Image (cartoon, rainbow over all chains, first blue to last red; front, side, top):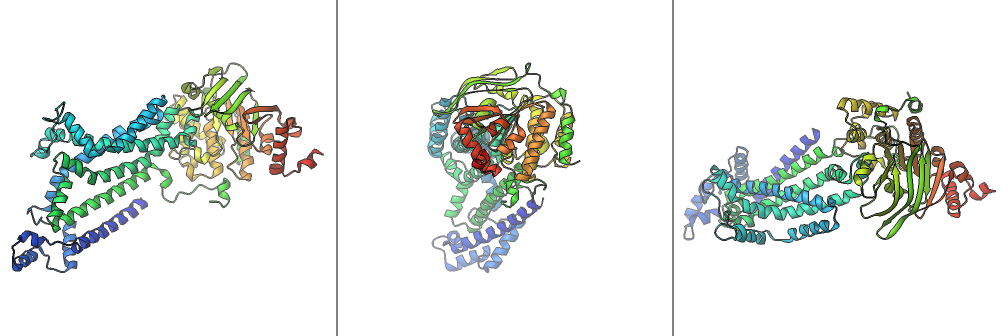
Length: 333
Length: 290
């Protein structure tokens, strides 16, 4: 519990530092949202009026305090370009990206972990080496190329077996759940399989490192077969590493999925961010960047907490109960 | 009750008939004939033949890399998959085929218990002492949780671990306590054969003796046999009555432990004994011979 509180305090401190960094970076970088909004022939007076209306003429500490206060109340401001609230804009685009990366991660884990295990445990050495090759080749395939291949195979209207939509997201969004889900199938497989190959390689490496471990031998000595010991002990003891890999994969997907969103013409967070940066939409970009980075921090926090839940050795101030010692107890420790 | 008392007490306790495996029908516990093992074209065991009878405590001694641990792994089916095994292994009346993992697994933890060299690495770090010690029972016997817990607590008491440590994880125990938990895990099902692979190497000198005494007393009280692997002659004479010497994958000498230590016949055994006397018994071998 003390670890959780300590970790949450650090999370809050990191968020505060992050907000300062994002705010400062966007003030240092060139480009003026008021000039963009006013147009190329705008007079200085009109630009000044827009700056005043947006609060950009106030001191930086005041602007920062206003923005932070808004964030704390869930108010991220209004986009200078679209006129919509930044929160609703992020919400609409996240409704495409988040389901896409969650589904992709599920595909990656669902494919990567069992195949990674099989690449170590399969009885036939030939099967093991074929699976190893699949992991290497799968990880080397660019998502863009894999996506194009899937479109050419399954894309409605263009593919050999044209059964799935390959462009766009329904206008009704998740109010038409079936259509929304179907439109995410090909992008999900594209992202999931590429990430799954990476997870497969990590799973294989983790299990190989456990194969000759004393813990697995002990489990076998208790009566497990090699396969049972590897799956119930080897994989369990590799869980913390696999959680880290899954967390990193998930974080990479948030930005990495932009290419796939673009290929499948999905209105995701990537397209929104690129658009807003291009338009110098300062208000929107600073909140979007902050939320994106905060999401990375949150993932890190969750991975750390899962490590603690999975491995009792990471518990608080654990000490052995005293008494007899090993050679390590004689001062080597 | 101190640990010595507990060990004495353990010696007087009857073996639990309910968990005693009913596999062996004769007095022969382990029977190995012409066992050879090759790993990546390297012969690690060469025509090894050995027998362990009921209630026997047999030592296996050899230099590093002589094949001691490989022999243990071959007997218990823990060799790497790449190993090529020839020869016969019969345990508990069951003739075991190399690669028949299920047959080996059915005997491991029930008919044969293993005590590892480094319990800190062998004990599962995410299992509590109670879960770890109860694992062979869970795998081999259909007991309800309460009964399993009762047996585990009794076993912990026998090995001298306080009940308060049942919920502790291995990293919360000292080296000696970890080895006691390892011994409890190996003995919880009252196996007929205990194989201890250098069980005191990772322990300091003070704890070594109590662990050896505990192991011997528990094996004796359980009416089990033991194969004890070590490179420490002081430990060997304390724990075993018969002894085999292994060198480059071959059993080169076998006999009564005391006699073999006093008068080794083979040159390799002689040099091993002399080296060990110098190192572990701090005796000048030349002077000792004279």
